[in-house]
Length: 463
Image (cartoon, rainbow, N blue to C red; front, side, top):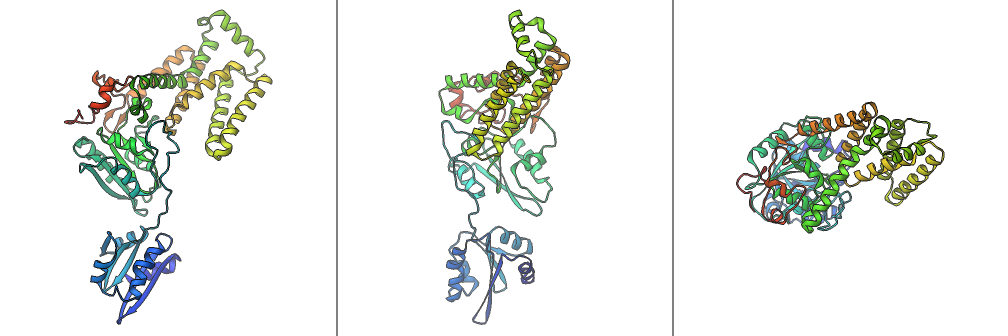
């Protein structure tokens, strides 16, 4: 294996090989300086070897201050440990791996994509061990099971399957683990790759949750769900997930239940408005004006006088402009992003109305739809809302209210036909379960404190 190291040294300038000859014995110290902590190597390995304090295999195994000393027996383990930030010591024809990782990740901070209204402020980082620690400090139980997998023939990315052994459904665990073992790819850059490779169905709405918040992961683990932690990413996958999870938030369980119930109703109305309202406006004003009061219809006609485009073109242009501003706000630095979006919306909207290109009522309709979608911070959910908004808008522009109803029916068929790792996506609404409604749109204090999700647990429904 020394020949392998010599070849690696020629091809990798950051690979360092230090050779010592002590008492007619050759000792090699091998490490990547870009992955390892130089202080640890100098103080605990190089200096003791030079002082003749680590000159036998027995002294290395008993005196090196590390909780992670591993014997290397083959080429694969040798390369994996080197590329994982370990230092390899070759002595007495044996390879010993010593952990000297450098911290190449951000520190624990507040979640950037999931605003915390009430609750803990810490979030996951790119460090795999830190992320495991954030979960373990919340669940101090020997029933918390962590099964590690190395996925990626070249990246060797650590992927952990995490669940509560006495709560989670064993059939679900076996199904997810089988899917993880079946993944064949050379590189895993992000958590999203894992769920894409596990679930082959191309659903519009996501059938999983990706979060930066350890408290959300811990809460779901205690409710029988499974978490998948991927090395080098800040988002943990939670599965299965259901449609009603879109209107829930972990902060709900930190607040008064009556206030939470009102908030959930607002979220549900916002979800419906964000998808339906542009298509509804087009259907009522273009195909079914008889459904509107005469005064409102006259007002709409006056506002649209002089606008050269049909309503559908007007709506698509405005939706495109709003999505453009949203993307610009997302991609530009925080210092200028929000200011640019506000300025762009005000200036462009005022200029378009003054020029007679867009009617004021259309700006209000599209603005209400876009603002309603802001209540959902998951980019997958936002993109799904965007797609269904356009589908229903186009159907309404061709068939009026009939098109609106067809679009709504297609939406219901779509979500009712979805599965999330074997579970119906619309649980507990369909199939309807009366007990689970206590933690659906309305949150009751009793359910909040005493019960788990009955679909995900078998013998531990009551806490």
